[in-house]
Image 1: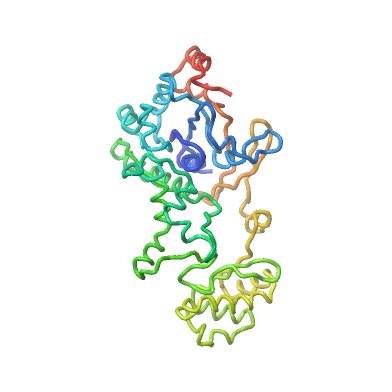
Image 2 (image 1 turned 60 degrees about the vertical axis):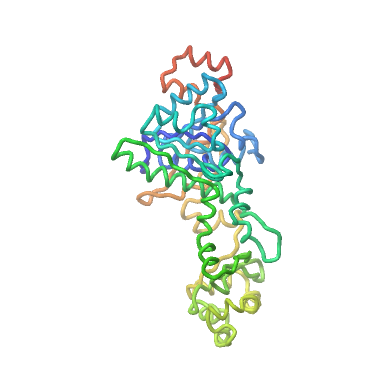
Length: 398
């Protein structure tokens, strides 16, 4: 398997999700990712549920594969020096601390840049590194609300809901990786690193680009639309006889073909449904009439009929039904990872492939401080120094 980032050393200074997600993506691609953890460990280590045998935290396992862990007390002089010696050897650093925290510890961007001018330093923050809220902390729920994502998520007339997955954290982690990868060619040309910024707020605002453009063009404030969207109808989930299906008619042709496939070729001739503009303006009635038609069939029948005419359609899967779907099985489904305790667990494979090959060898998420001794030795600490730091509690080894 091609590992395009093999030889790249990344330091991950963060917890829970945004930075760990970025680190896991880089690790998938072959980078050596060294995770810096405080004495109590990444917060995600304490989150249930846990695996049955070794009592491993499932959330931590999901986003910390292909990494090494060193447990360092950065509030001590020796701990800070150990971190900076690691940073001296880094190609990239991902800092997910609240803005200003690293500077107060004496390990921030300016300190690192002075020692390692070639380092690409990626700062992940909630609100960005400037402005009146720069130093405030942020979590995914807060940023989905603040950014406006929750204002357009959910069913009309119902309370706001967050997206089920942590889109603010995950998207920001992806933007961080994009920024780091884009900075590498410039560093190869000049030998100089740079500061890369990625914020949860701006990432979520970027995800709403079409909503911003639609509002600015029309003056109509976007509202929640459940599983639908503003530009098309019918385009949402509908109840079939045995569960929900989604049908997406993006064009007039698709609507005509969908109606014909569902034995209602007359419907597109009705003035209320004659074209997309009319159907969107008449959305509630469009969805009711079309939904009544869908309800006469099983989900499998709807999917089969829509597939026959090229109209986007799917059952609404659960994870349990998806894992056994022939397409997922054909593409390898989930990867099995063996923890050093002997317990095996499964994770979704990396979505990135090279030369039609997927990643097969995943290193399990590390135990807290599992690689502390190895990492310190790699940056010049001798055995006596390592033992002294472990003895003082500056470094924890598991």
